[in-house]
Length: 229
Ligand SMILES: [Zn+2]
Ligand SMILES: [Zn+2]
Image 1: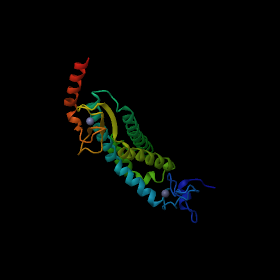
Image 2 (image 1 turned 180 degrees about the vertical axis):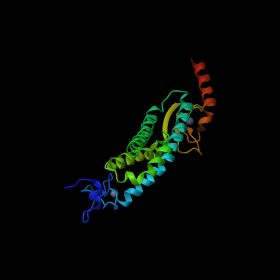
Image 3 (image 1 turned 45 degrees about the vertical axis):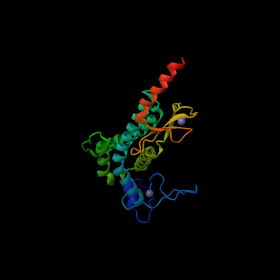
Image 4 (image 1 turned 135 degrees about the vertical axis):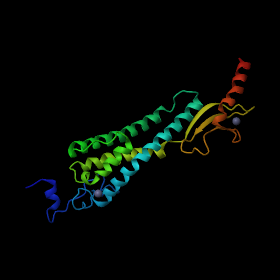
């Protein structure tokens, strides 16, 4: 019995099933039913389209994750006066971004080694474009199942960052308005650069400041503190 992939692909009467991660997954948790692979490849048409789509979108998603994090880091810094409370979130994003670079670099290298072509620049757009160019070859590669698993996971992690960078609430001080029992919390909305972030009182809705006004807010508090001490 021949086990060569190309022979199996062309054997009449043999239906090869798509090897992509999650193909034909039963949402109810039953046995997955992978779709038949396209002729001459190890993937079905929808999974090939999914690979194509995700490789194409990866560079932009990667770039946006950077912008998102920079915005978040700046806001956190402004409010906390330089203390780095953004680190846990940044950690998740740094990991997700490293995951993408690792995936692209490993598979670019595999193509370079096995096809004896010259390597792409080690940037995310260049490597993603390189993989796209060799997609028909990857679709036939015995490790294409792993390739899809790694791509889908890296893509999903990056995509989750877009929505998961949460609105953060940080209590910053007592409300400086006379007689107000409220506390001020900073509401950090990295996704929403148009309205910006706010510092608002938990007690009285009208006690609201833009984070830009934060330094002027702190002065009366310090002045009153020195009077009482
Ligand atoms: Zn499939
Ligand atoms: Zn208040």
